[in-house]
Length: 508
Ligand code: NAD
Figure 1 (tube, rainbow, N blue to C red):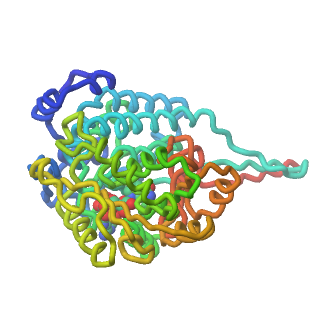
Figure 2: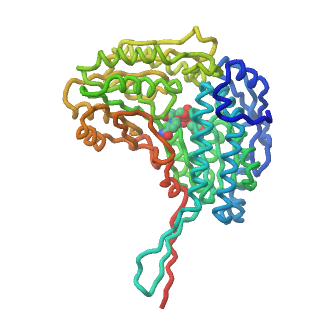
Figure 3: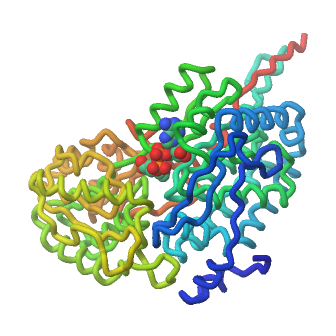
């Protein structure tokens, strides 16, 4: 596919146009190490299966420890000889901007890969994953020649410089739910500051990462600076996490695997580990809220991307006096909006969930929720009319106790747990905070004082007031408690990929 299409043109396409484009798609399936596509040394591969229809899209090379070691050595050599980090920041900026442009020029293929591999509706793959990933890289490119270091307030006889230096080799380990976008949150600041990166994509979304690598080379990123090692988490992910020559792991994924990376680091070279792990985020709706606005945000907050969003608003904590009205409104919005179907159809708003393991896990939670005493207010099972893919109905579990498992564990599917309270704001806040996670939270109220106090009281990396999921590269993203350590996005991410150096000069 060589013809480039504009984003506007892609967003006007028909289902048929996308099906035709998908049929013509070709896949790069090999590892990308030191600027070259290469098979795994063992020759091992794994299947990339589409959740649309269970078709095998491709056999992808599965990196083993030797391949990961080659990738890290190549990244280290590139770092040590300065071929990237010693460039004028403006030159790094030019390369990263070209890369962002190439991503937009290849939006058709990148979006198709995302949609075919993990089932995201094509419009969202274009609009969010591809466009926002390009925007993120461009934003960090633009930042890097405007970032200054510091001089300390020493006495007259000395000059002390505080400079930022890149860390070295970054292992970026990412999930499948926003594969390109989350990769760009790591790649943008890591590469802009002069590091080398070895990217380990999720098994479900390796093909897009490999295309990204080809485009990086086309943009002029020197060989070795960016390597991609698809493979199984326990093998390739673990080898990267335990590698003695990796300086930092930047991880996004589940809380369980986040902790494994902390163990890998402790048992190897004590590398830095930044983790962005899951959530069980509350939408707190108070009695004076604008219910129509809240209903729409609650529905989008949980059913968008079929609930496979780390910051999904999966717990609705609502005051008893408005619960019935709000719930009726949420059901109305959901039924009117969330058209389930083939993710290649631009009319589809909710595609399949990523794989059959995830499908079974979510169905298990639906049974469990009812055993725990919840009632099904909407949905409750598979959406079989949509075809043979992993389609689920948007589901609302009502009458959920906040200490039940469906209120505490991340389901990562289109399942909303409704928890009602009839006390004051403090009771709502206590329930909202009663979770191991702390990624995001929202408060719906017309009282500005209550809103500010609630924002302070909520233990979450982002608090939204009268909105949900408003986000941009300009603000930090990450969480408290079991959700994580470290923040992606914003200029603060530049600090995450650099270390401070003090140079103290005696002036006599
Ligand atoms: P996951 O933790 O299973 O996998 C994430 C990455 O880790 C993948 O690349 C995987 O191959 C690798 N991995 C898996 N097992 C491993 C092991 N034993 N050792 C080393 N690496 C291993 O998560 P997922 O299923 O891909 O993604 C869903 C999870 O990601 C959810 O929990 C979600 O909340 C979280 N998430 C968090 C954020 C955030 O910013 N906080 C964003 C998106 C997703």
